[in-house]
Length: 311
Image (cartoon, rainbow, N blue to C red; front, side, top):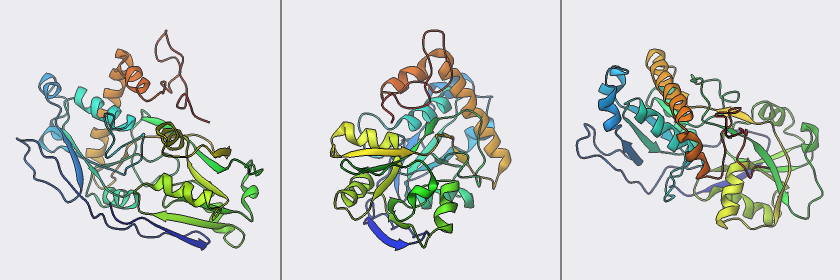
């Protein structure tokens, strides 16, 4: 990945992501396309494709092209053995439908732009309310919640937007905070926003920035915070000061070819329904310490909207 930067300024504006320096590709022996210029995982649906080949013929002749950023535990570029729960859900759902796909890891801002331009079919994984520029399928691949994290000794609490006035905030560029983005823009004279550009070790660097007291609060999702704390990559000297509402996540599909995007969405929805019905979705999520967000997905379990350890 390219060099990470953190640029501080008053107000709220876009900063271009840095180019990636280290890349690699994985191409299957019989794949009809070659390596690409960024980290790539290529998956063919294999036996599932042969089981129901007539369901999605248009998607079999041209594999679904997906892009994602490194945002563990949702999608993890270098993590072993788990590739991220959203990656697992999407790959297994498409495999059940016999749909081949390839996944490329690129910085978040670039990933979104590629889908907007039609250079890729879909991006993992925006929240539906905050990124209306994409076409979405129906079944959620998770729910995401942003929280405000502070140093453990801080007395500050977040309850409403006005609590942010006079504060310094640090977050990853293009996080997609919905109405809060508009509020920050409208109050740039009283709220200082620091946007991180680049994504290598972004969580560690954000919280290092917080520990050095160069910002008052870090805005990041609960699953990212919990994942890094569980791995020991973040110190224990931080706490949540309050959160935004949870939002539904789905693949952000390109509007440049709506007919194709609708087919992709239908295939993903069908696969997720099958995963839930068979109990495989519950097993998949359990590997990440999570439970299904759907209410009572089967008689023996109760659903939850968030990871089991979410704040």
